[in-house]
Image 1 (spheres, rainbow, N blue to C red):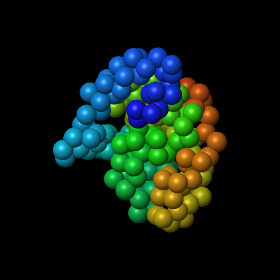
Image 2: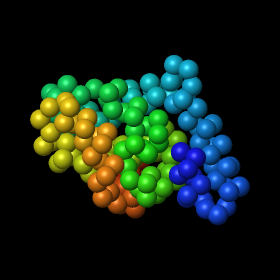
Image 3: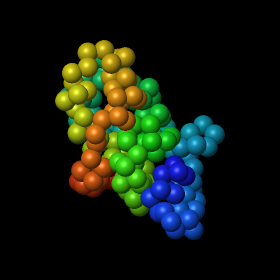
Image 4: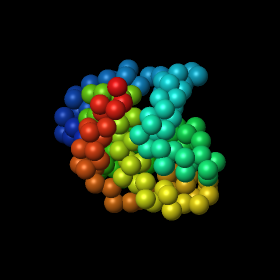
Length: 157
């Protein structure tokens, strides 16, 4: 997260440091004991995915893929383990501005954009491999992801 902010705000180190402190405060519950914000976020993601991405939600269920098996990997790194670096840099503004809502909106936008690839996976290990390895090396347009995530924000309220 720190490296992403340094790259995003280069050469303004003071701004990068300020934004990093904001992120630490805003997402403290992702990284603190018992992960309270992570737990709330996973619960919210499940409700939102079931409502807004029902085919994908049901497909994950049929494959035995639980949100707890993939969301922490992406969220604890603020998408650094899921997205190519340029896309993470683009999305960082949403995380800073909207906090957990931004994380949820980016997740829904990303999974919606990748839905066809997910639906082609026939087993849990294939879904998890796509999420935790293949997605990061895929050419994901960060600008498009952020535009899509902004459209998802009203659904995340």
